[in-house]
Length: 154
Image 1 (cartoon, rainbow, N blue to C red):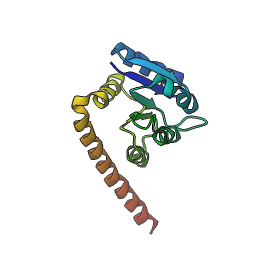
Image 2: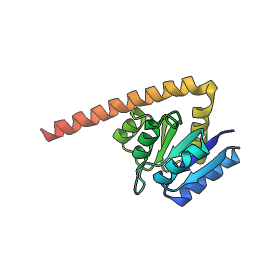
Image 3: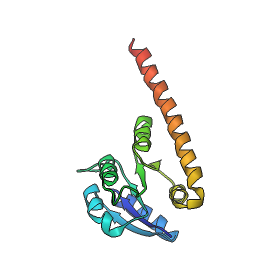
């Protein structure tokens, strides 16, 4: 199976994700901060990183951007797992390079299915289409919300 790095400042979330993925046969390595993850990533060489957005010190966007800026880590898929459910935030994450976006609270089986779908080479085309459809839907929602705010401001 896959080697997955879980990065979250909440110990209970790290443990839940680790247990879920380990039970499904994956090897899991955890980090409690973005800086720790960046220090470990080249040694661990994960197949995927599950990354929280809101963390002290270095947020998930900054970590993802640092990974993308380094040619040795740029190809590692990043899935954002976060309590931030804002549509604009989701769109920014996906457009910024995240392969998927899962909001907390989540069901462990749904998270595992999303992760395995991203990692399965036989479903990567379908996952890419789904991501594009999700981005299109989010762009529409964000645009409608922006227009509604503009109309209310007039």
